Length: 228
Ligand code: TYD
Image (cartoon, rainbow, N blue to C red; front, side, top):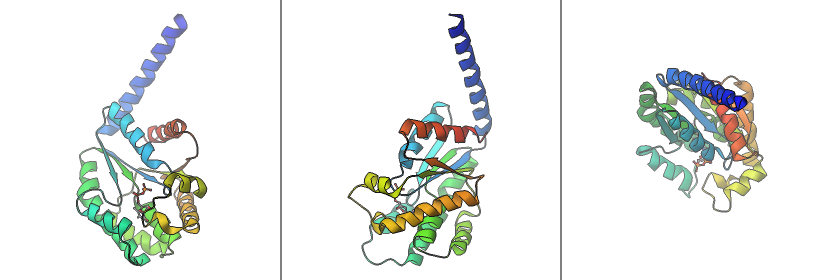
């Protein structure tokens, strides 16, 4: 009996501390991006984190690239479903155009209001897919990313890493234009994300995404709680 009372007290203290820290950072907003190859499981994890933050009383914005809202939706339609030839440079500019609109009209205004922005793909997808995957010059893409975002950087980026065989199984047979690119392409993209994480270890963290949904969620929470 005595032990269970003490455990309850401990839980209450931990909860109070977490809550207090979150209340402090809730005033300034946070920008977290989620990256990885298609079928890496990031969308499930964003939803779980969103739920967790909302339960703590945080205001969140769950958004995505390409195609958040408005003009972005039109660009997404072209990027994922256009069935003619699209050059790699044209593809890069379309993703970057979508990003510029998204940052200026949606992400920055939300962060200014202290909202937590959770974004499904952002600048690192362009480096991994168009740079490492398609072979567009990576340094040029970094400069263009900076132009598109006005140098806004995520507070945290989580790369959900999964082998290409598992990701292909998760994507299934119905593939959009990007998903139809082939195994070697996705191997290069995966390598690209891991390379980005090596180059920017403070911002970019990698989680092994072959584990269970629950244990990946635990790891996501550890990383997000580490931001305070
Ligand atoms: P989406 O259906 O949103 O896939 P996912 O659920 O895997 O995020 O499709 C987005 C596709 O666009 C995906 O294949 C990755 C690709 N992409 C790029 O190639 N470059 C980019 O800059 C972005 C943002 C996405």
